[in-house]
Image 1 (cartoon, rainbow, N blue to C red):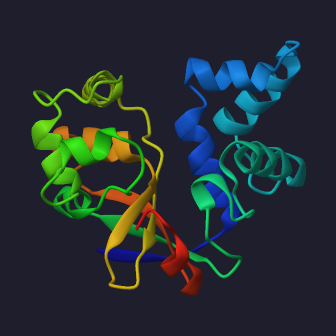
Image 2: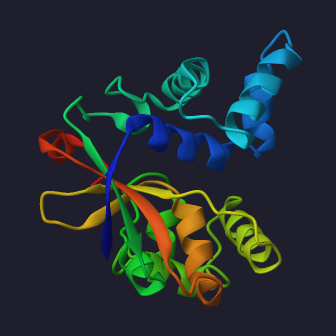
Image 3: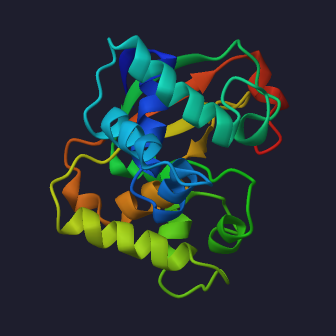
Length: 205
């Protein structure tokens, strides 16, 4: 693991939005009801042509991720997490990505990695352990996309637990696909890691 230095919340939020923005369901949410295509257009620009020095873009990205996932609110995916989180960007090799732990959230990941919760176990099982939902298809589709494209893969977002283990906050499917296509990442993968006392209160450790 190489520590690449401090990261900002705006960088973390951008990575999260970039990871979600191509999802049809997420785009449908952004369009709204009644539909307002301008909402989606603004979000697409904020994700695909980001300017981290643009306060309006940063504000829009934060609003979206806060509304959907509870960023900074101690709710949703951020249940139990306080404002004490400090973020750093680290680079992991693909073996280290395989050592990341799935969060205790959702039904699919415990099925894929029942023994260790590790991404490496999930990657081993993704092709033959059916999760009962779309997870298998999503991961294998992501892996295929990684295999056939040079497009930048958004950073994984993780939390450092009190025991030092890194647990995925966002990017379970992406991390699994990266391990499947490890040969595509000879220089490793960037991960945002959040740490702070309130991580101990996160129910998905």
